[in-house]
Length: 270
Ligand code: 13P
Image (cartoon, rainbow, N blue to C red; front, side, top):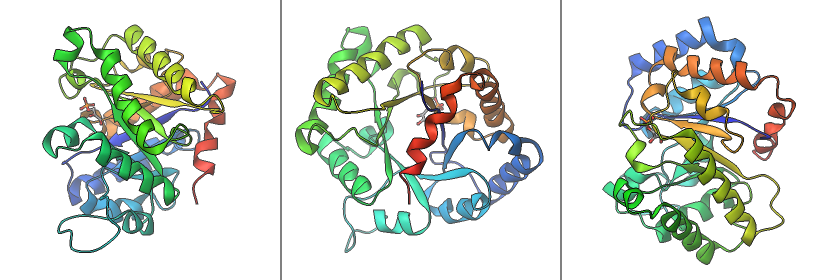
């Protein structure tokens, strides 16, 4: 591992009060963990600017949960990549299973978003993963390959440079059923090897795990060599729980010399 990235995906949760108490907690208890970790908070769009003001002086990056495929025009309710960039967003989540399901986002739309995010020098967090049905029918690898293949077919073999991949098995999201860390390790290794088949020049491939992570199970995931970060939903809504996860990761990984090299990815940002 040469970098570690912890991302909070707040989904459709949060409020002005919640944001105030979340950052109050950080100020009081958690600031010592911010120096050595890459932490991203992705609140709902309406709160991006509020969260940006809170993180302006601390070492946390701003993430968006979505972006539109258009830059401007008659697209009611949407937010463009230039708007996100203007207010300080650095990372954008794309292809989350909830958007694939509820908003019918397919790999074409996801590719268009990745194209724009990279064009404007932000970092996409591409979510991939299979349903319970797919898993039970032994199709996990087939599904993952297809999700990657479709994007490579549209954007080319080098598309995974400067991108974060988040493996989120859909059956593990929000269910409390975190996957078996050893299986996740195998899948992460597969993803990295598969990307390398297309792009042998790629240096770092950062693959996060997401799905029912909490302070009790986090250690079993971060101890796997190919799990390079975490994408956390429910447990990121509670500052105490979220920073407990960060603290455990920090304490476990701090002795790994290469841990501190992850900053390469942040250095790409402007
Ligand atoms: P949970 O951590 O609530 O399972 O959500 C994971 C997720 O979907 C993060 O994007």
